[in-house]
Image 1 (spheres, rainbow, N blue to C red):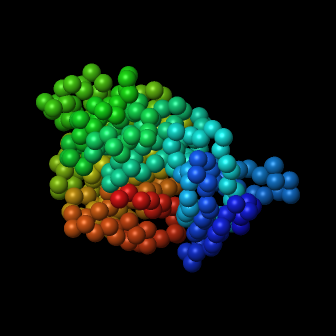
Image 2: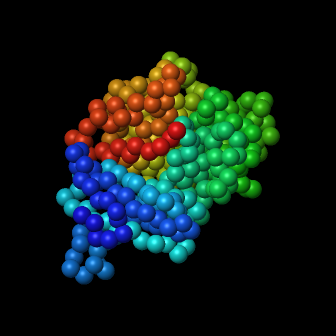
Length: 307
């Protein structure tokens, strides 16, 4: 159901997700809020932010959490003070984190006045509209995950970089070492109130020790990002995850079946399939994964545009 008349389309899909569309005037930003209760006095509804929409044009969104809720209400609210990012909201004890996919293995988050970048590559152009990074997470040294020149360009003054020891020791990383924190598997650091733990992530294309998955904790929420990994016991053993980013492609990470096995063991509340373009150029892994994972465990699968 939609409370607001600002939506052009509110449609229940066959998989019980809800498709929304609405037109945002140029120069304005809107936020979609959701509520699961709706008393007679609408001011008492417990609204929470779902996403901040881009300014100008038609915005479309599929609410993949809808199948797991008995009721769901929506409103679109014009913002007078737009956040630094548009994207999905994650409620924390210190305000919402906003999550924005950038491409392939890269995403950015804003939280509590900080910017967090995951595996930034491809120069400065993809990040031109974002504030610079206070914290950068780098999983390993492959070119679709690591670029020293990109990191140098997007790192804020006083920013920090968390890397595997293998990257920290590379000659091409020497200029960045004063800003870097190397983490071996099982080690933890705290940066700007964000806890970062390195998790073993490896497979036939990534030997043990060179690739870090991470669990980051901010505002009481635990976020997992895989880097390039296989269906290993350490990954399956990660627990209490609110949001997971799981890479899936052939031949460099796990395939859709391995990803399904990982997530059914990990049981995060929300999972973003990413890094899902195969070496052949095929991009069907995310859709296959979502179908195979199913809805029986109540895990929300968020399919976003990474390419």
